[in-house]
Length: 161
Image 1 (cartoon, rainbow, N blue to C red):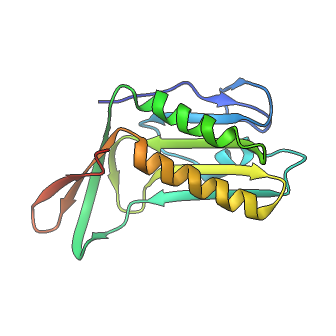
Image 2 (cartoon, helix red, strand yellow; image 1 turned 90 degrees about the vertical axis):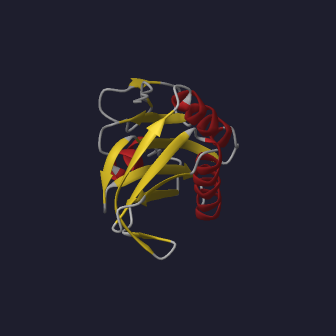
Image 3 (tube, one colour; image 1 turned 120 degrees about the horizontal axis):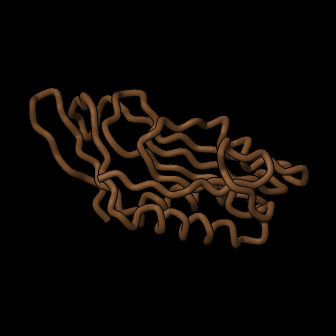
């Protein structure tokens, strides 16, 4: 199932997104399109931000000692709403200027980007902490399931919150 949210953008926004008050949700999306780290970083750019910290979750070729060939993400219909809720919680931190986060669905190959997050703050320590919280909360709460296909012909579903 494909789930998509409408992007929300602020200063330095992702193309095609609607503007909102600066310093909050710059971009939130769940969908099939490839993710662009630079666009997420640009979306959270702010003249008062001294730090932008970003994260890319990349499909790797192994998991628990087994060779992974590819994977596929499927999302619950509420995935976009849950992602927006998580992003809003991080953005509510008074130290955070802006948040951008996206999760990809569908088939992905080794090296493809599955999750992108970017956060801007005045100082680096707050930016690192906020981005880490954002990624951890997305991984813990987003109703997205991953099917891994292994080289030995087996497969498994993981990350079901």
